[in-house]
Structures are given as structure tokens and as C-alpha cells.
Length: 211
Image 1 (spheres, rainbow, N blue to C red):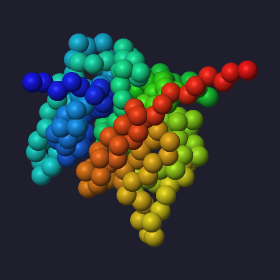
Image 2: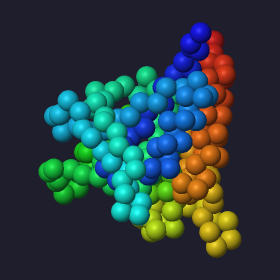
Image 3: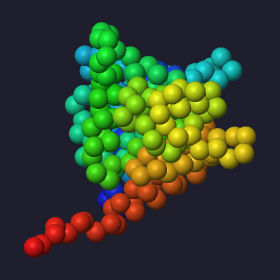
């Protein structure tokens, strides 16, 4: 008998995504009862095809995505994850820009909506915190961790990078934001991401104050 889904975890993705995270997301989250749905900006296409970061000159993983980020409601998800490697840098791209205007890339606009939606978790690993750097309002003052390569970007965006000695921390939780250092800790990241989702699911709704 099929087990009832606990809900959906959306994963933002583009070309050059991390293969290790992709493989483990597809295995682990369904095992915990969650559907995984991949989301991207499709540029007016019905669907787009993306490949993982090449390893030893081989692209091991491929995916066809048909869910347009402009058309999704954050409230339909338990959590949104930005997959690692260079995919999130591609999702920051804007065709036209104006001096002084905040980034209007569809994925960035979507993350603003996610951040404003109560109890929806946001997760990043490694380089994927780049996407949140596109709007300092998403990250300013937040305690985070990331790959050493992008520390300067993250700190320049106003985040508080957590260090453990001469390394960045493996994993950091700050409210609804869960950040991981690199794909080597994807197991811990997924476990904690699910735990944080389920803490919110079990929390009693706030009662309205009475006079």
C-alpha cells in the first residue's frame, strides 16, 4: 500500500548542479515520505534539460525540468533547497538591469516569497548560497556556512559566517534557513532539514490573543 506523502520539498536547479546532492536528494527524501520536485526558470519553454557538474570529463546525471519557478506557490512546499555547485549562479541572471534596482531574476523573486512564507524551510549547500547573495535582504545578519570559495561573497552580502577554528562550520541553522558547507556533509544536511520541517509541522498554531 502506498504511503501518504508528508508533502513536497522543492529543489531549485539549473545546469552544472552537484551530482552527489542530486542523487542523495532523490533517494533520501522519498524514503522519509517527502516528494522531491525540481524547479527552475524555463525561459518560456515547456521544459528544459540540465546536466550535473562534469566529473572526470563525464556528466553523470541529467534531469528534465517542467516546473516554472514563476508559477509555483511557496506555501505548497515544506521546504525549498538550492542545489549546490554552479547552478544557483545561473539562476541569478537578469536579462535587463537597472541601477539601484534589486535583482529581479525569477528565482530570486521566488526566494523573497519563500522567506516571507511562515514555516517553509530554505536550505543551501556549498556554492548555492550565492543565490541568496543576489538580495542582501535574504541573508543580511543571518548566521550561515558555505564553501570557502564564496566566503567573501557571503560576508559582503551581510551574512554572519560561522567558523570552527580555521574552517567554516559544517552546518548552521538560523530560523528557517539551514546552510551546509559542502556536498561531503549532505547526509547530515538532509537529516537536519527533515527534522526542522517536522518540528514546524508539530508546532501548535499560535492562538489569537483575546481581550
